Length: 309
Image (cartoon, rainbow, N blue to C red; front, top):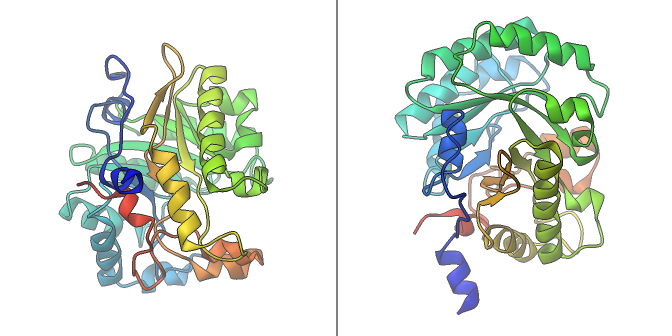
């Protein structure tokens, strides 16, 4: 009965009043918070830029139709002029309500400007935020000044109602520059890498605690953008242990207050689809097995945790 109850209800621990500094914050801290999913198109291998144009719009629609019963928000990873506008248009058509736009390479003026244009175009259709960069400081893809320049250029074009942040793994999020950049921290906290001996339940509790502690330390909102448990790649990773991770993760609520102006948001699932190209690129057996749906869009058991009843 307990397991069934966990599948039927996702509790929300909301602050006394919603954080109204930005529409995104107000939505995330409301009594009806969205459920977001980290999304890369299932049939896109972004390592070859030509694939962005070759990707059929019908494939994007099929992806988002498969996700929509459980999720009403998307977390993107970058901007490409041939792909991102189509994702936004289809998402609007399917009544998604929140999108975290993203800039993969802060040194790309095309990405920065394109992301700003999308935000301006869709500000009346979605609640929006922008994540500038993803793990690039920790892994040496760009420098702090690149983020500062990108943020200044973005802010000159972006609607003032749209907050920005950056994303780093937990070790990078402890850096003062990351903690004070923009308006929120988009943390990637992966117990699978940082605490590999933890079982699924303990891993979920550890990830939540790290996000809450980070929000308290930084005095900023933290959106836990990536955490999770693969469903294959090692003996310990199965569809059942992935299900247990997500059940344990959402049971305490999608929101935790950490201070007067800080909170941790746990309403993001990682990630939408298994992506075989990630395993090829990294050489890690688990990297194509993070999805809540397989590459052919068939659902895994963990998806049911996120479905509204």
